[in-house]
Length: 322
Figure (cartoon, rainbow, N blue to C red):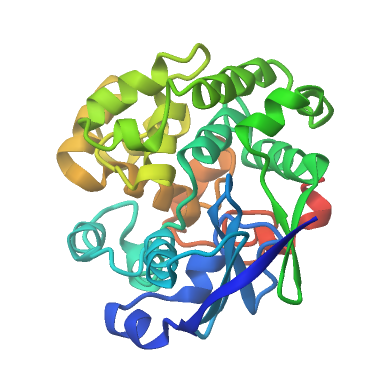
């Protein structure tokens, strides 16, 4: 187990309040029980040279890293991962009058997308391919637990996602985690990162379309996976990860043919297109399409905390995602 040292301690409470950020929602949505317990969350700031933050819903934080790190840089990274400084005013303005997201915007205006590394964003996207919410996140949970990479951060034992090199050193774990055909895609993504073909630094100066093209150059990475990873790993929201679920719901809500949904969606949401898709999955608890369409017809377009697991309650559902 790797020992991490305390490099920074402080509070985000004032800044979160001033910017309207709800840290409880931000830390809980799309999170596992081993990274959020209702009071505190673990935010992985660096996988290769392990650095994590332990953050309370009240805003207190402590950052731990394996090697000496500039505290200002560590805190900057934490703020970026939590979206503390991201101005969602335009997004919320659109959402408040939107057929699909007005209820979500009214109740969850404090939500911010919690970012990951680009590598992990791609793995998340691959596990969602041709899978239900429960299936996809069950794969991810098994993947993290099976690789079992751990670090000690103060009094906390932290479980870390595998790095690309961990996957390449022991690819059999992917099969044990029941990724099926997706395992070969994860291996190819790991090879691309380890070989320097993909890196966040290389992609930073590219346009959204160019980034998508670079990610899709890896066999098995399609448009949906690439665009979801761009949102999670780079906070690039211009290109929506549209699948059959989104097409059907948007077609019904907006009265446009399914083949026109992506064009319509980008025209409506602009640079917030991917964020709107992710918000929609939260609003409808990522339920199967039939149930999601029923909820749309009834106008039930806010998360239901009684549904377990869902993006909102995943952290309370460890026994249902094993």
